[in-house]
Length: 335
Image (cartoon, rainbow, N blue to C red; front, side, top):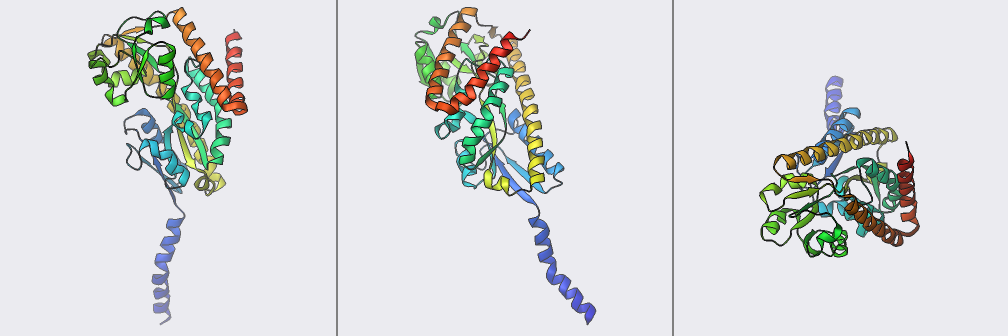
């Protein structure tokens, strides 16, 4: 009887024991709007794998690409609300709620990946304070390749763009077109080819990666100017409450994996940019370095945008932009 009673007790407790073991594992859904093969998503999957391995399954991150959980435009709101644990967003799209996120969209002040990394280092601590108030925690950020200028004709000066029909997709690109004397035309990424063929646009700022994906050499587009217009970043973030619910040791492990993912992602972005520029050239696009005069004119536009941005963001914007420009000056003086 005693043996039977003991067995019965074990059977009764079995489901509870299993439940307790399962509850020791935390699962996060990490949503992204990008396709599985995009280098950002590949990097996310590697990040999730490393977290799973290093925590020995205590934290499992399930990466859900291609808008499968939420549309890209909805991910930030759902992470903020705690409906999704974590997500990847285009940082500049947060500017409506967090103006500091708009630094990514300031054109012509970041001329290289090194510059872009300095901007992120200046931006991150100030941005995190703003995100903290919204219940969000930044894990890491990775840029897309820099925005370059695709045209149907050669460009030597900004004045050569007067009268052009320039693709726009954000307030800053509308303003760039207007300041250059071009007509802004709202065209989504998927509509670029048809808009060029229909002669709705003849000029556009986009990355060389997008140029390759769209096979612009099959269009009237003939030139690519590597002006390094701006480096839009993707931000990977997590709901603050779910972040704080993790043990401190687990948070440390996740952040270490995030730091590795950031370094890996920047290298992947740089490699994708170089490969895409080479592919454009192989297919007959004339890859040009902008003339000094054009670079100077674009830089002046960037300074104008920067001043306007600082006016909009006030002291917080100053806390970010002053260290960035100070670092730029120091880099310029270095032997």
